[in-house]
Image 1 (cartoon, rainbow, N blue to C red):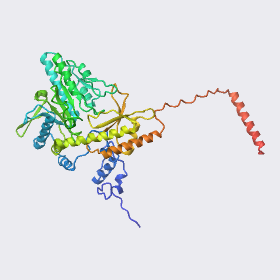
Image 2 (cartoon, rainbow, N blue to C red):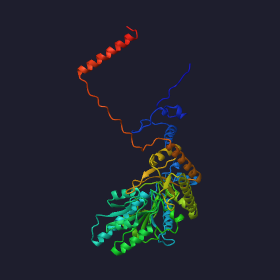
Image 3 (tube, rainbow, N blue to C red):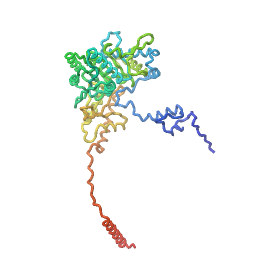
Image 4 (cartoon, one colour):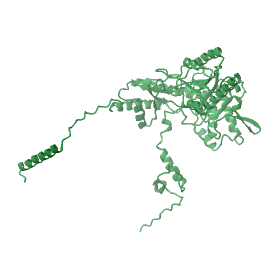
Length: 492
C-alpha cells in the first residue's frame, strides 16, 4: 500500500515549485495574501509571468538603454541599496554626481573656467529635468516682472507640437500657458520663425528639441537664437531658450561637433539630457545644466550641510537610488570622448543600413533625416489595402517591437513606423529586421484588406403580414399536399 502525506499549509519548504501547491493557486491581484510562500516559489512564479513581457533588446520603440557592460552591472548592484539623498552617509556618491555635471557642462560648452564648478543637477530623467528648468524660467520671469511693476500672472511657454508629453505636464502642473507651433506635411519639427512670432512679453522661454521623438530630427536652435536675439533687441524682453536634448545631447557633440545648438548660443540658458538614452545608462537618470548661477534663482535651491560643507540641492523628489549616478560616471570615464564617438558612429551607420534596406523594398517613404538621432521613421507608399499599424502588429510575431503612430497636429494624417538604433543594435540585426519586414509585407499581400469599404448589406425583403383566415387556409393547403404525396408513394 502506497502511503502519502499531505503537505501542511504552514510548511514553508519546497523541493520543486512545479510539484507544489503554489502553482495551482492564482496569484493575488488586489489584496495581500494571508500566508507566506517560500522564496523559491515566489521567484519562480513571478519570473515565469515576466516571460510574457517583450524582449528589451528587441524593443525598438524605446530610446532607453537596455544593455550595459557586466562590470557596470556589478557597480549598479553594489550600490542598489544606497539612497542618494543621504549625502552625509554617501559623500563619494555626491561627488560622482558633481563630476558628471561638470563633464556634461563642458561637453555642452558652458562658459566655465577649467576648474570652475558647473551649475546642474542629476534627476530621475529628462521629465524631472524639464520641470526644474521650467520652474527656473518661470521664477526668473516673475521676479523680473515684479521688479518692473508689471503683471506676472499669465506666463506662457512656446514649443513645437512635436514635444514630449512632459512639456504638457509642466504647463498644466505649474500653471503656464502652452503655446504650440503646429507641424505641417513634410516639416515635422518646430518652425523657428513661427515660434518667434508667437513670443510676447509673457513668454518665459522658447523650448527647442534636439532630437524629435517623432523622426529624430534636430530643430534649428541656431536660427531660433538669431531670430530671438533680434526680437529681444527690438523689445527688451530678454526671452531665453531651453534646449530639450533628451535624445540628442549625447549625440550631437560626437557626430556633429560643429553644429551650434548649446551654450555657444547666448540665449540658451539651460539644457536637459537623458543619461538613460544615449548617455548609455539604464533607465532612471537625467541631467539639467544651467549656463551660469544667475540662470537658476537662488530661492529655488535648498542647502544641506554635509560634513561641514554646503551642499545645494534642487530636485522635485527626495529619495532615489544612487546606482544610475554611479553608472553614468562609469560610462563617462570608461568610454571617454573617443568611445562615445565610436558608439554614436556605429549607431548612425546601422541606421543607414536599415534605411537603405527599406528603400530597396520599394514599399516605404523615409520620414526621418540622416542628420539627427540614429533612428529610421518610415511610412507606406501604398496604404490602399493595409496600414502601418498592421505591420507593427505582425512584426511582434517575429519578436520585434516597432511602434506605429500618427503625427501631431497639423500633420495627423501622416502615419509612421519608427525604429530606434541603440548601442547594442548591430548591422546583423538591422539586416534581419529588413528581411522580417519583407516577410510581413508578403503575408499582408496575401490577406484581405482591412481598409476596404464594407460590402453593403442586401436589401431587406418586405413580406406582408397575413390575416388569421389566410394563415389557416395556407396550413390546410399544405396538409392536403402532404397527404396526397404520401398516398402517391403507397403509404397509408
